[in-house]
Each structure stands twice: as C-alpha cells, then as structure tokens.
Length: 480
Image (cartoon, rainbow, N blue to C red; front, side, top):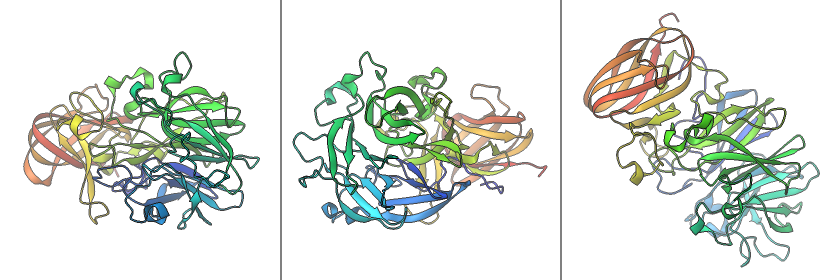
C-alpha cells in the first residue's frame, strides 16, 4: 500500500473473502455483514460469520470485529455440516440486533440476536407461523433463501426471502420471490407469505423482462421510496426496483453495478472486462454519500468471493445510474501513482479470448485468475494473479499520474516476452517492458514510463511465450 493512507477494491484484507455483503450504519459506524467464503473453498460460505466496521467519516480503515456467529450455534447444525449462507442484520424496535440467515439446503430461516451490532450473536429461534410451524416447512411454502429485513418507520417488520429460476426447466412452485410480515417479536409470521417480484416465467412483456428476480434480496427505504436491490436472472447484475409501498407496486429501474461492467455504455457479455459469476450486495448512505457494496469472483470458482464497493448517486428522480467496477472504490479519488500496489486489485482482467464464467472447467487453464498463496487464515498468505499467458490484460481504474515515473513489476514463472503498459485499454503502448523468467521465486522487472498526466486507468498486457504470475507493481515517483 502507498504510504499515504488509501483504500482500494477489494477494501478488506486481500486474504479475506466476504461475499453477499450487507452494509448497515448503526450509530457512527458502518458495519459489513455477509457470508464467509474460504480461500480455495470447494463450496459456498464454508466459514463462520465475521464482521468488519469503519467510522462513517473514514472508509479507508476497516476494523475486523471477529466471529459474530458460528454455524454450529444453530441447534439444527450441531455438527457444523451445513454452511451459513447470505444473512442480513436489522435493529429491532427493542434496540437489539437481529441476524437472519439460512443454512444452505435446510428449508427454514434462523434468527440470532445480540445487544450490539458485532458482539457474538446468540441463537433465538426459527421464523415460525403462529401455530409454531417453521416458515418453509409447510407443503405449500416457498424456498427460504437470502433473507432481507426492514423495520419500517411505523415499526412494521418486513421480511423478503426466496430465489427464482434462471432457466425454464428450473421453474417449479417452491421457488419464488416472497414477502412476509413479522410480529414485533421478530420471529412470528404476522401475515402469510405473498409473492413479490416476478420470476422468469412472469416477466414476459413487462418492464422486468430479461431482469426477473433470481436471488440476493436487499431492501432500503430512502425518504418515501422503497428500493429493492436484487440479482436478476443473468446472475452477474445487481439490479433494483422501486415503489412507494413496501410490499407491492415495484417498478424495474435498472442495474446498479455488474460484473465485467456488462450493460454499462452498452457493453455486452461478450465484451465483459472481468470474470463472471453470481453477485449480491446492497446500498447504504454513509456520511451523506451513497455506496453500493457487492462481490467479485476469484480462484476460478464462485467459492472465494471478495467484497468491493463503489460510490453511487441517487438522482432527483430517484434513479441510480450504473457505475463501473473500479480499483479505487471507497478511496474517494484516484489512487496515487506512487508506491506499491497488489496486482490482485485489478478491476479488469481478461485473456486474449476475453472473459468467461468463473469456473475451473470453463476456464480450462486458458484464463488468468486471482488466487492465494497459502491456506485460509495462514500467516504470510498473499494474493496474486496467476496463469498470465499471451494476450492477458490487467486493468486498474484509476490512478492520478504525474507523467514520467519508474515502474517495477514482480513476476515469476517460465516465459519470455514483453509487458505493454498503457493508459487506455486499446490505446497507444507507452512502453514495452521485456521479461524473461524461469523461476519459482519472485523477480522484479523495471521500466520508465511516460504516463499521461491526470486521472487514467493503468493497463498491463503480456505478449510472449510461456506462463507467468504477477504479485505486485510499484510506482517510484522521484519527485516525492
């Protein structure tokens, strides 16, 4: 990290994997709650819930709050065989904090409670009907999934849950977007579950067509408008719908952010700038500014996802313009072109053939990917970009360049060629940096680059033979 305090995407330590992030401001801090993936994991959400927080006035310093809930605290999961999937946290009318979650394939929704946002939560109960039957276990119930909770201004408690099909062959009654009203005890169903957003077979010839509900429910109230954020059927876009009512009347508004920047300025899936997979997140007002939190894919799977964030603007008419994925994220300004940066903060990453779904079989050894050296929670573990081959491009948005600067890149592997350095993806090569490596140890290659002055991306493209890894790069601004 540069000596001047900055922050980049992902904004948590690079060895941390928190997807499905729900940001919530409680008091003078913003808290990030989410699932907890594992480095090199082979399924979703293998670790216990942890939380991070930051002062609302300083998003550049995030504090690790520790484990807040363990998977085996739920009586249904004493052996820990089930994983904790995407949660949400809400402050109840009694001032306590309620954590809603599902255990992977189990049908119910669990609830835990705590007196503080990040003290260790204690199991409370399952969400239940008035007769004591757990929600999700009746033959007519829909699948419970990705809970989101809102305590409205009048104290009414709204629970959003469920998932939808991506393909026609997956359409069957248990899958649905749904809304449930809860009693003040936060666990008892007050109003029977109702269908909410349209799913795949219901979007034809409506404003939701092509953007029907898939999963990732998240709810906010902004002034007198309700914003429902969700992942649509293409899975890589975080979309939103709005209404003047909490439980009905929602209209599709658009995407807020999408992996690979698909949809931004007409970008198609074939033109994606990063690897695809699922997406989940939420929006939050922090110190009078609005942000969207989401996750990216790493490690050639969907099982090691990392938290990212971007600033957004809510227009006077209530709409949100789609933002691009960046490397500078919560920094509030371009990163300084001075000092050392991890290669893994690339917001654009692609092979010579473009991008694809983040999957070991699909990528088939032909694509670069972000991965970790060392096991989960291992001291000294670090993250880097692996499998860089001919045509691989790494992109970083944005840096504040001052002109001519010394640049060093740490590489390893076996290959011979050049790294082309650019300020635009398809722009002029500013310099060609020769590289010849045959080593398992990290080595440094050096160049002087006459960068364009001002705010620009940094693109690094390899052309040559063999396969390389890149760990980090360094700008040396000799005027400092």
